[in-house]
Length: 281
Image 1 (tube, one colour):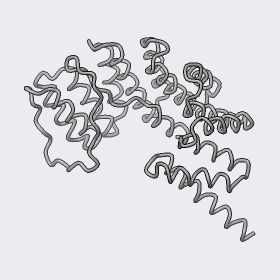
Image 2 (tube, rainbow, N blue to C red; image 1 turned 90 degrees about the vertical axis):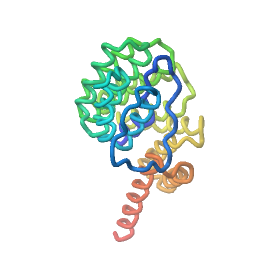
Image 3 (tube, rainbow, N blue to C red; image 1 turned 135 degrees about the horizontal axis):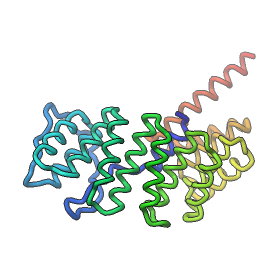
Image 4 (tube, rainbow, N blue to C red; image 1 turned 120 degrees about the vertical axis):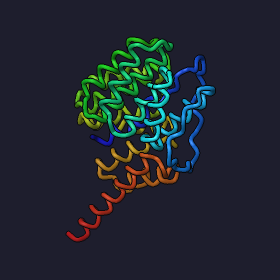
């Protein structure tokens, strides 16, 4: 899978959004930096379904095998949609991407939750289909979700970018640019969306447009690591190695633990190898 698609999947992908219990809409609490590994899966607390759901969601990311066990118990005890949602996400966490995606789509089809929650399920299913390599199914889930959600909403913007990521991965770059351009009409100065457009132009081979957009992305937000990564890519293609290195080193200063930082380190190592090879020549 191309780095551009992976990075943008991480940047724009839907989070593991909660289901209301029954009306709860607050975001998930942040995970602790160090969570002790559990030897046994917790039992669901039927008197406290909100805690059970939170615990199961956290485990789906940290210990998906324990989450699957916990969710299975909860489903058997009548945990309903939240239990099934956690069960599906646990399967995704265990790299059972196709099964997890199928269950998320099935749950979205029958869910009694508001549209925005069902749309999040479809967005999660699409991510899993992408990991499975089933790009047509990812695209179908995202398109269904876009039909369901109000145009102009933050969810609509995110889904457009999710679908554009799928289209980039499928080499359908003109269609990807159409979705990105729609998103930019909604948020013309969003640096990550501008950087995404630069990346799509670069992959298409329109390097003048890609450089212009990458410069515009950094100008909009000089500390945005996605924009810096893309501008560094363009500098490297123009053989402006010092400028590329400067952008990538800046990423390491700003967000050393990010996916962009990992890419920047790899890029710096690559140009160092190239430089040594040139010296030997």
